[in-house]
Image (tube, rainbow, N blue to C red):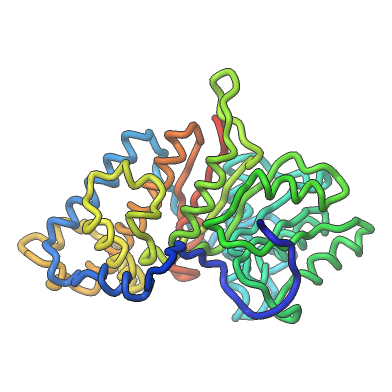
Length: 354
């Protein structure tokens, strides 16, 4: 049962695998790999797998990002450019995420009161941003596995924005682990809660940790049906900025069966993804740089950073490939530059073709 709720303690959106009677900390410790001792052949395998998945699923070339105004939602300059230094990076990510989703699909007609499901929402700052942009017209379903003190949430602010424009209830907060997310049940809850009918969801998140992304995508896939050869779902679009890839595992990764890697390889890829945060210089040809080196321990800081980014990309491509096999149109893009955040890849998906 997914419970609608409103208060209590501070929490995070990370969904963790449920392992009854298992000491998860001990399991993680046993699964840890000495990545420095791994052979550099792993780099070649990761790059080859990424290329193979891209070609097999006919995935579009990954798009880049810049700090130019056209990479942000048109509302950014007017509504958010004045915010303080501490908040501007978050506002840029939120604005770029919304803009990327509209570019991938079509601009939202907020007067139709679209419903955004913020996954692993925490204090719901992304939903607050969308609420401001939509002038309170957007409706929001906030999903997190923990509950929060009212002062740590944006819920009241989001609802006030709707009230200012004489609109009725625009918010539903649901407490559930994403491992237990049932989109069909959630869809019914939303229709019971909101006065106007809900016809479709838009899944959004900034940032969604490790296996939480896989659980959310699996929930979206489970809503799909085929009609005259076309994929249909009440999840009309997905925009998820991923993070914490080091928490991914072979048992939870969506599309794991598509990878021609061992479980040990996948755990190594997940661990090495942490090196992406070592970003120091522009990318070079990684295979040329590591020529003559035998173990990952010999890699320089820049080479580790580049390999870490390649590991993140492979895990995200695996997820999108699984969606593509289910009939979704997908895109992986860098939605902001790395000076804004090193977790700058965004998964975009819509059921069927655009």
